Image (tube, rainbow, N blue to C red; front, side, top):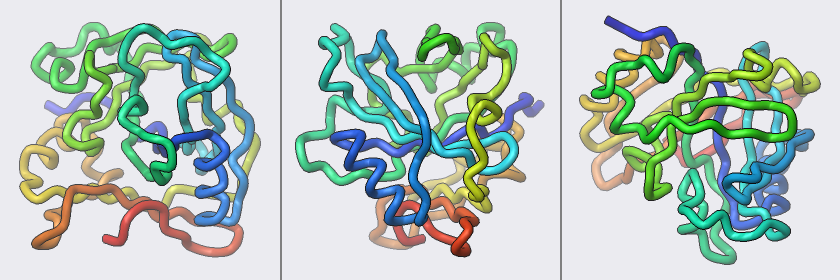
Amino acid sequence: MPLRCDLDHLVVTAATLEEGCAWVSQALGVDPGPGGAHPRMSTHNRLLRLGDAAFLEVIACDPAAESPGRPRWFGLDQLGAGAPPRLATWAARTSGLRAWPAEVVAPLGIVETMTRGEREWLITIPRDGVMPMQGLAPAMIEWQSPPTSAAFALPASGCRLARLQLRHPAPDGLRALVATLGLASEVEVVAAKPGRAAGLTAWIETPAGLRRLGEDA
């Protein structure tokens, strides 16, 4: 039976926050807005609202923070200097995450508490920091304080997520996961073209029209 989830946000990783924000600005014609720091992960971010209840996050290692003493999330430790920014993964919003079936949660990571400023949430994080299924499987997030998506606190941007496509050479397992999460109507899963690697592409309505973020479909 499908669980109750909603697409919460897209995640853009970058070697530096400045490079990630510049990449998003060039792709969408809109600058990311406010953000903050994640003390437990030694990362920082900036956010861009995408419609009523979704947003885009640009995230990078925080050079002003000490090492977290553990692998950072979203594969950030694997990014070397000069690594290009990219649409790396996505997150799905839910409730009751700690009570979820272990067979659903375990492949996505360990449920941990995270904070940014006064905001607190639960999120699944793989022990090694490597994103499941090459970033195509989502991080699961449950907002705690306040108990609403960070999107609601962001200023309007004039942007809206129109479509998120996930591509995998063998998509059946990913398609089953998306269906289990109740997200089949929000997220499109397709087979990657022959010779093409797994990847994500988001189409975003902007004040200047429809723009693409991510690799060519």
